[in-house]
Image 1: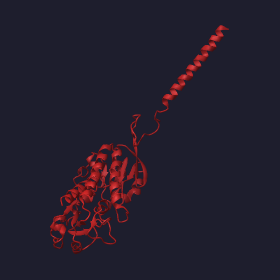
Image 2: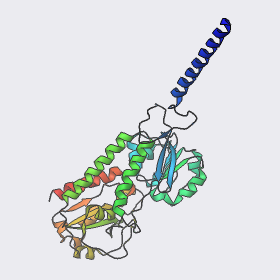
Image 3: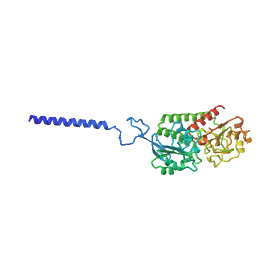
Length: 348
């Protein structure tokens, strides 16, 4: 009997010990990551130390899962080229004909050229087997074609609307540049650099606002082929959205204005009669190497008899956008332009 009772006692103790061990193991695995799941980056810290492999990017079409630090990247959005170049991001293919000539991708023979947006060779995109294609601006209309061509790639469209159809072009420009920069930072592991750019951009905007007196009238123009086109408030190429951003008073406004790349047709006499306090100029030809009849915008303005008696010309209140602006509408370009505007406005 004694042996039997001892055996029962030992058995009970063993059972309790096993149960305690099982409970201890169970509690240890509750907070462990599911190793069968793919890690996704978010705004929180990755406390488990797992290697982040994807990021969720919201573009104009919705949410897209994008690989972090993708190996094969095709970039087609002029608003992203300088940012990618500054961060040393290697690209597999680009549209070299509509890129600033001094960007490293243009001279790099290992980077394939898909051509411009009028007759692009989209098959090159498929040939490089990209992990990521960045669509936008001139190539936004090819979004569905590209998705169909490279179904295994992540395709993001960072485009934003600043055309004549946009209700808030200024807000769209500011938020679009900031959001796309932050998205690129997440994709390429450059969060600090992206946030620094956005902070500098915000400061430049505030500097222009504080430098403008709220009264001076503004005339914005695009010079192309020796002709002066009107960049209208709200819709005009490059300059248009800035009337909303900075509260500029236009010296002239017309109905049915567009975002035409050469500006709207308007007589130089009409510009002169509006007698603007300031003239802001985009030199389209300076950024397009194929333009054979290019005349520097400054020469066109200086040699226009009709403009010589305007307040802007007499007082030398003229600001020229950076030379490559037409093909390089990156956040860096707008940052440089805003800094130039703030300095010029503050000097008067």
